[in-house]
Image 1: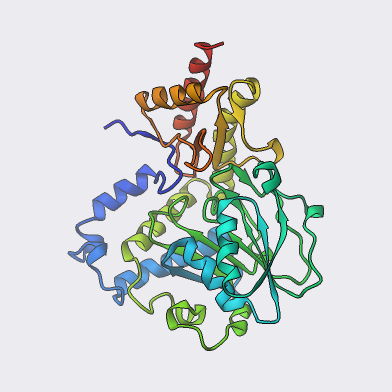
Image 2: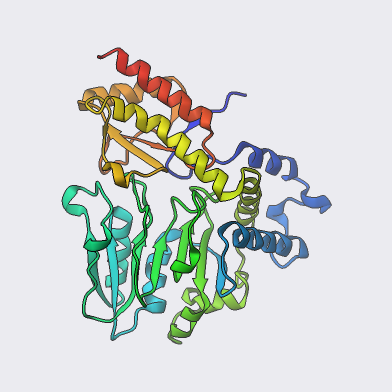
Length: 362
């Protein structure tokens, strides 16, 4: 079977090896005579899957022991509300750096919970860049935390150097670039990520949380919206998305076979370079949205000289077997999402298509 060149922004490509293993185990997981989807979440078999996922995450990301690892539901969007509900005190301010639509949505939810401040933003240049360190000016108010979105799927920008803060909790939405490169988890008080980009299928949300933050949580929160509930129950307070966590555990095992995060990061640079090289060679034809120093390795955004030519490119790309190259509906254009599981061959094929398409018009 010919696999499609899948550049969807999310849910996105999964490693073929992971899909094949899941297919093999689909009806009979580990000789239980049941699918993972039929296992009790209280069973030894599923608790083994959960433990394996936690251990592999801790190993791959070098997560310190003073951090909890949770698997929740509701996507990153629920975290937009849970974070200020749990950590924004009445006498403090929550700081947000705006780099795109998702950071705007996170701020919108935080405003409902308490006092907020925009610490830096690049909306004046249509989110073409990431703020520099000297542009992050902290207010005199006491900040409860500073929130950033590490990668911006719609605009194609990414933090390559995270803010250096003194005594302020840094919280990052890493939904679209988690596991794409090595990071120092200890620089963050909390990291969260929807699974459907680099971790697995949609339905699971990863939360990596510094334990000391738990002491700040007020007692009147609804049970399911209190992080302590999920810490105490090891993410098993209610029925979790068992199949999604199983798939996530298989993806983590696959990452280890790719040379860990060092190997994954090297491949991601190689894949993105193939496409960016086409844009740099012919910037008047393939016009990048993101400024060069802020370019994302995950989401590569560009337009062509006219809307008609852009649509012709997308139409011919679809006929050639490429899926998911349409830009987000809010800004249009083109977007190639080259997440971890997108193979090098797909990016090579796209770069070749871009070259041949250009030659027809130049």
